[in-house]
Image (cartoon, rainbow, N blue to C red; front, side, top):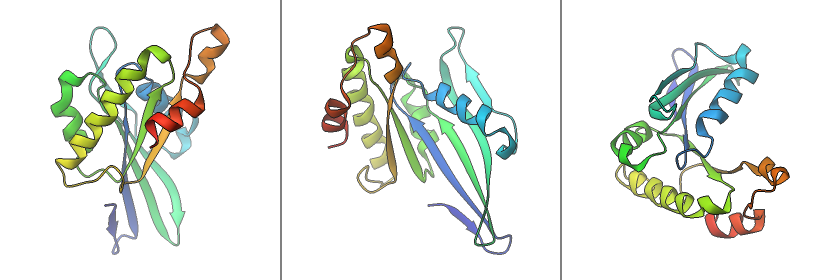
Length: 164
């Protein structure tokens, strides 16, 4: 649940970008950071491997302005996509207020999306949270790759498969 400090008139929410490896979680956060720079309260932090994969997390603090006199801030994180880093994925979910599940639209990545979504559900359960009751945005990523002739799942397929 978001942290509300009545004395300081602040609200802080934690948003986590979740999904399989190489689906675009870090790219999403980099885009938000670059295009919302004036709202950022600090620099983006990334911890990566030699192969440029996220091993721990990416983090972006963002000040979203005022709502009804309260300063609203978002702490945005990504999790590592590789299942071998599940303990880190679980740790990053602690205290989450909302999730953006980044699904890779490539047909070849379908099974990775399914496994990552199941992993998300299991990790949320470890904190007593239900995937059906937490704010969750499904993002169909890499839609632009259709122009390069790569086989993508249709939006209808993705909605039916992942949004059920």
